[in-house]
Length: 148
Figure 1 (spheres, rainbow, N blue to C red):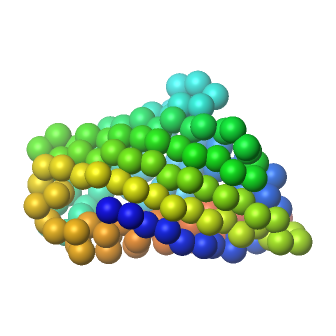
Figure 2: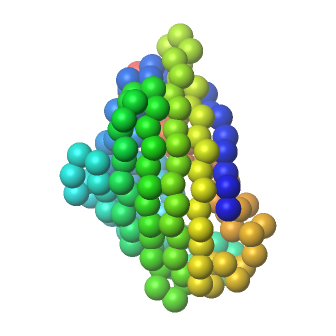
Figure 3: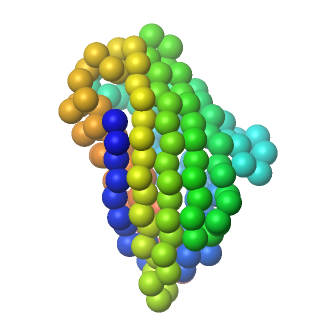
């Protein structure tokens, strides 16, 4: 499954990059996030409760950040396991482009899924992934706007 999008965020690039690396802000912004801990400067561990179609599961996973090129560009990889619901693993490339006092965030992401999730069909999973990404970025925009 592949996703990509552009989002204009009402904050300077340094603030957006800092927010994307702050476990407390991420926990607030990630839909269904129950726990998020920073294992190191480049590693996060998360527990997220998600519902994809009829499948509801608690996923445990980890994300590793590659900050080479930051704050203009960075990438991340991760994997999550939802027990009987299945698994997901993948990565994303993120570009943060300054536009005055705002930041244009562009991302491309790829994920492989297995288990019950894969049986739901690509359309259901992709639709849910797009919805969750939109919720995350709406939450991030709201959070950064509240900081002003």
